[in-house]
Image (cartoon, rainbow, N blue to C red; front, side):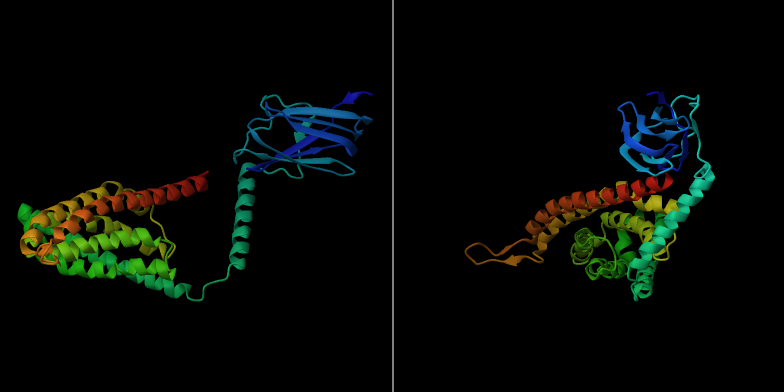
Amino acid sequence: MQILTPHVYWAQRHGEIFLRVELSDATNVDIRLMEDNTLQFRAQGHGAKGDNQYEFSLEFLEPVKPEIHQKSTQRQVDIKIKKREERWWQRLTLREKKPVFLGPDFDRWLDESDAEMELQAKEKINKISVESRVRKDPYLGLKKGYLFMYNLVQFLGFSWIFVNMTVRLFILGQDSFYDTFHTAADMMYFCQMMALLEVINPLLGLVKTKFFPAMIQVAGRNVILFVIFGSLEEMQNKAVVFFVFYLWSTIEIFRYPFYMLACIDTEWKLLTWLRYSLWIPLYPLGVVAEAVAVIQSLPIFDETRLFSIPLPSVLGRSLSFSYTLQLYLVLMFLGLFINFRHLYKQRQRRYRSRKKKVQ
């Protein structure tokens, strides 16, 4: 029995290859993908030269996935193969010269721009179908409005602190370091009290942020603000207050507007990059400044005995609060590791998803 080559017609999409083999009443169909990325086809059927055994092989331009989907009908054999990477091929075969038996399948043929439009239309339809299956939250508008106003208020508060401190720094120079607390503390008190909502919001399901990292950041800052600076007048005139407040406000004037715009489905690329990149140097510097503040407060707590824990007379008068702060120093750097890891994963997820969209 003579071995012949059937007519094969092909078309492509960004993620798939379609082959149509002109072979009717095909039997004993054997399709294999070899290790060298070559497709081998063999079948018995009625083709251009009558009933015979037909076979062909095609070495693809780029790697494809090993799964092959084939469907035999009375008129033809349809083959669908998925590309390993979703992108447009300039031709089907590795060799530039096209095999004589191969031609375009005009029933399926699309050029690259038309294929992209088809892909976008399918993605839009899939998105609509998914959204239609998801039950809409009747309070979504109210939640977004609340989150927008919260982030707006925090942005305005920290912006006031940042601008106030920057202007005073340019006018007074280093002298502005020593009265930062008296000029910015009230607004910082307000902003950090408001920040307690960032611990409550994840518990209520209003945001996707995890509870534990939010609690670490808010609790850590409030310890520094209310316990170290607020309760010790001796600490309020130290330069470390300036650096702590300035680092906090620098981070937040980019974080809060990013979340504010996210509430109205708006994105500024520069703001997104700043939100996911500035924390890399600023967050560790902020923790170092906080640690310096704690260390400077230790002898003051020892001297004033403020917040000391009373002990039985046999053991002594009291246990100085400085011992608690020394333990807190260790926990502070543990919290730095946990939050740094959390923020780094956020950044990876953000830019990995953006890269996929570009591709």
